[in-house]
Amino acid sequence: MFNARITGTGSYLPEKIVSNKDFESILDTSDEWIYARTGIKQRHVIAPHETTSSMAEIAANNALQAAGVDASEIDLIIVGTSTPDRVFPSTACLLQNKLGTGDCVAFDVQAACSGFIYGLGIANQFIKAGGAKKALIIGAEANSRIMNYEDRTTCVIFGDGAGAVVVEASEETGILSTHMNSDGQYQDLLYVNNPIKDQKQDGAQAYMTMHGNDVYKVAVKTLSRIVDETLEANGMVKSDVDWLIPHQANIRIINSVAKKLKMPMDKVVVTIAEQGNTSAASVPLALDKAVRDGRIKPGETVLMEAFGGGFVWGSALVTM
Ligand code: COA
Image 1 (cartoon, rainbow, N blue to C red):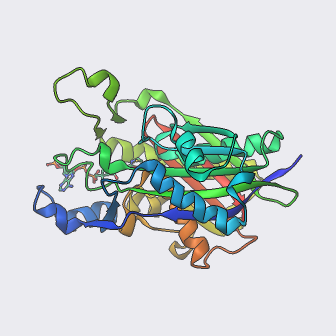
Image 2 (cartoon, rainbow, N blue to C red):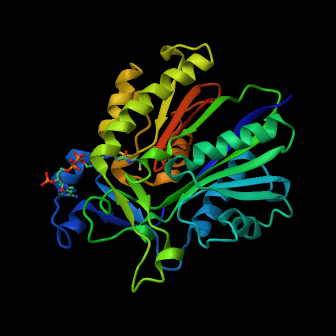
């Protein structure tokens, strides 16, 4: 049986940046409020000609290049997204066409902010079961397209972008374990209404709604618990983890999970100030940043975790 190993990472952020100050003229909000409550200073926003699949394409090509893998070798593509270009075909199919991989398994995972972790977990199972040898896992989101820019409780928080990894079958150690979970009882705390159903109503569009404070409380509890569960499953202790890559939802949530792990903040990859919350893209974007700037080195142990609408949450413990 092979292990599944991350052999390359890549990412993409749209050029346009919207700062907290930019919101002050259109909303009853302030740079001070946004930064103090979330840790966010700015976010990237997709251009009109761009789509989730076009961002995913750039991130995927960067990851392929880093892995030294040609697109034609890829036999599995999983895109974690809640903002697909189309209802169907999947963004993964559109991406497959853009990359020119040839025939392969390609599908989207809709697990909100945990979409990338779910994708990584599924790819891990595929590879260990012999169903794939070289996989592309992407988290990509055009969150600005599901924002209500009159709702200050959501639109200041989310940003756009894409992150990708190549995962290959390997005899070396790689993904140590992945954990996925969900609890649908929280469906009304964080959701996007259904544009297919709602378009029959006059002028209805798909927008995100979040009861932030209630989400916050469950997120802190759940993410702290999953850290313990992940380490326990691997017979490891907190000090065995070299890097924490948390979902970038709120700096206060990140701080409390790091504290629980007894992890100094210089061992936690934090991108939220520059990128906001990019949902499924946030973990692979942060991973790529820390790999490319030389912080994360081969052989180091990385704990990734995410939490999002559903609720749906997950983690991955990985030797790079
Ligand atoms: N600017 C100014 N004031 C704002 C605001 C904004 N952008 N957004 C909300 N407020 C106001 C609220 O209306 C409320 O006012 P009120 O007291 O008069 O009713 C007040 O600020 C406090 O709101 P609250 O929602 O309690 O703030 P908070 O400290 O919980 O921070 C979040 C809000 C969204 C930043 C925070 O709850 C959060 O990060 N939640 C978790 C998000 C998450 O993890 N999501 C899961 C993955 S996507």
